[in-house]
Image 1 (cartoon, rainbow, N blue to C red):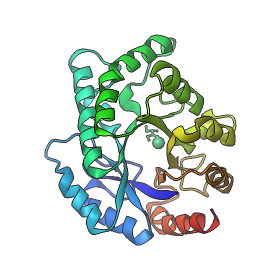
Image 2 (image 1 turned 180 degrees about the vertical axis):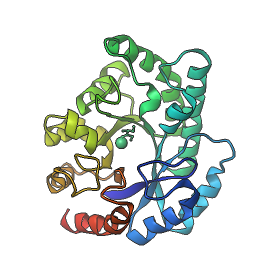
Image 3 (image 1 turned 135 degrees about the vertical axis):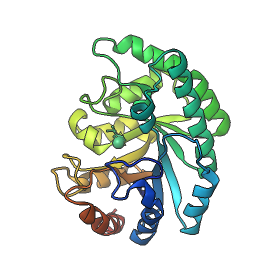
Length: 271
Ligand code: LER
Ligand code: MN
């Protein structure tokens, strides 16, 4: 099992204790806290040198777990559920993320850039996303980059809210391609998945990324999730991919910065 944490290099996010302008400090913090890698929020590639960012990671002995891609939806209003220019831009952006992931040796998260969905239109919207993903999946296959579909709770989207709905979509609508897997976020899972251990079993080897946050999206330990039970189960099924912090800066940014290192050391010792 490997550990990473969300950092951002262009626009600030509530999921990192560091603003984008301090991204080098964020990388120093990851190194000094004993993380294996960084989960990096990238909105677009205008003026961004991915190879330069890779050098900064290498300098610190860090890997990259995945690219978090959702900022473009809020900032540019582009998704796989749009039509016309916005859809074309969303597809192009996902291909640029795949190119960047190839350089960084990481996965690409497909979160809300897929589109939020409209209640009552799930079937046609799933079909549209599957159709619009076809060329992206071909491109990812060619580049040998993995796309990870994030399960996100019902208050943010109508589509792919649980482990089961992601698995169903990947298996039935996408035809189970090797390069598409599940990104499972414990904050969302606590709302949607009836039993976390059964969700882990259902995903099996398709579970390829885990977001760590407590039930209230605070840093682990400040809500009511049983992290030890989750880590025990992940270990039992042989999970070897990343667990990545994506929690709010709560109870405080200082607490997140100070407690991340001890938390991952404890999990490594125990599991
Ligand atoms: C992104 O990883 C996530 O979990 C979403 O809640 C962001 O809107
Ligand atoms: Mn998440």
